[in-house]
Image 1 (cartoon, rainbow, N blue to C red):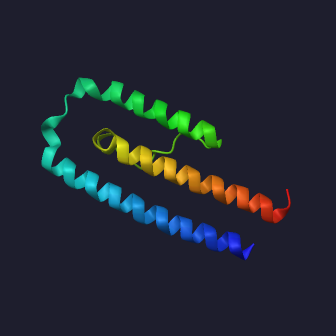
Image 2 (image 1 turned 180 degrees about the horizontal axis):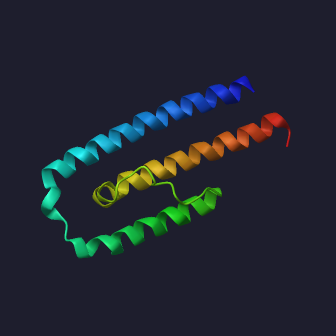
Amino acid sequence: MQEIDRLIEATVRDLATQFDRVVAKVRERERKYRSGWRRDEIPEMLWAIRNKARRTSESFDVHPNVFAAYTEEELIDREDDALDLAAYALMLLHRIRVRKEELSGS
């Protein structure tokens, strides 16, 4: 079980670093281009992003609310980064779950 604990710690650190980088890029870009979005485009874009999140999360049996820490503007501005980061996080969580099951003999 110590192996799992170390794997989880390393994964959490890695995800935190990746998330911090994405959010920093998003916030910097938002400061530069704050007025560039038409407000009527936002609901349709958010729907598309959330749909992609749901499909990604279903394949890993994880709740689709993987973007809760992002603001709407961050999601809109960096859809690809958000989706990549979410997919990466889900993949790592899936690997941890599989490894934990292997170690526990289930």
